[in-house]
Amino acid sequence: MQAERNSKSPISEELYDILQEKGYSQQFSELITRNLNTDFTAGRMIGYLSHYTNLPEEEIVDEMLAILSDRNRIMQKKGMEQNNAKWNQMKWEGLFAPDEKD
Image (cartoon, rainbow, N blue to C red; front, side, top):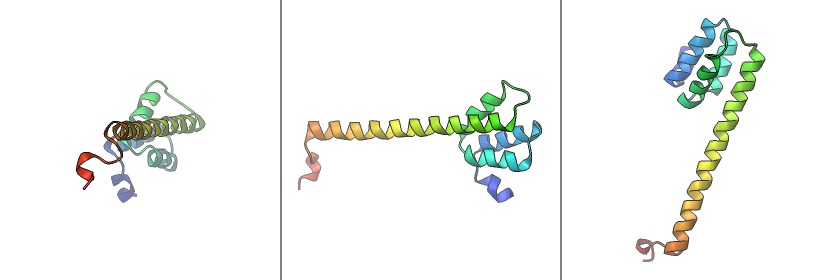
């Protein structure tokens, strides 16, 4: 168990502790933090939990899925932006950059 917690971000570990303090089971807390294992995603969940005192597990899982969906959407957008930047560079410079022609 300790080795598993060490692979999480510090904020994800903080989320685990918050869930435990709020009375959620160890198994549930572990499941949530295993999925929200980055500072960004765990921080979003901590912000969500700060507005409520006693949420059903189903609502926390629903929020976890929404956070992961947002994260995936952001990652896809960044990937498309990088592809678009490369495409624009190729349009301006040609297929081969000047140092790649030889």
